[in-house]
Image (cartoon, rainbow, N blue to C red; front, side, top):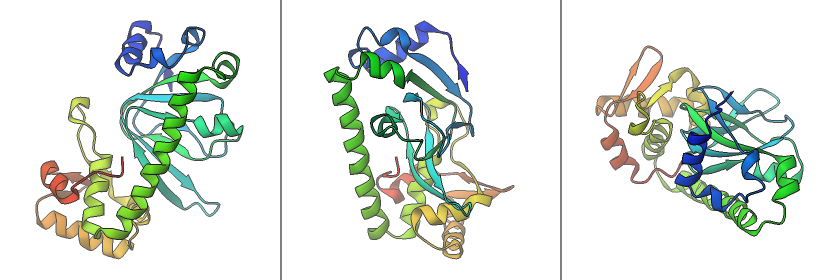
Length: 232
């Protein structure tokens, strides 16, 4: 994590997402802009939670880890998204680990400042309520999607979820193939069947398996197969 002491860039993000109308004047001086590199952890499951983050650029992955070390991916998120709102209201440790899938920029505000200046500010409370209810709606769609669509559709949607936006000027759709067991758990299939579907998509020219990675070759073709990218 790196704090970016660039007030102009922070103001640009606030204006882009109209966050200056959500955080009142007393809170604005306590906002900070942070950058996380690809693969860097933003917060870790079980640790104390002290900062409310608002994702303003990039893509993140949310996952949980069992006591046995098994990983279950919960979701992928892109702007605008909030991390830490449930922990803030419930006064509990961090529920899930959050990792940067691409270079990520977050606007952060300490909980203690939210308590002091924002606990009774209607625009902020309404914003956080909307965030929480949207997460429940997305989770419901996710469960329906996994039950009602074949594995190739779910895999296509997953691959699109881990692809970067073209505007990020990054290499899109690169997935570490050594973590396919996590992918299988996420989309609700077996590791063996997932490998069969990967081979099928390789044969169709949609993806390529090379040097321990799976690379998206035809993003438009995957989009057509997925129909809608509900994992974001």
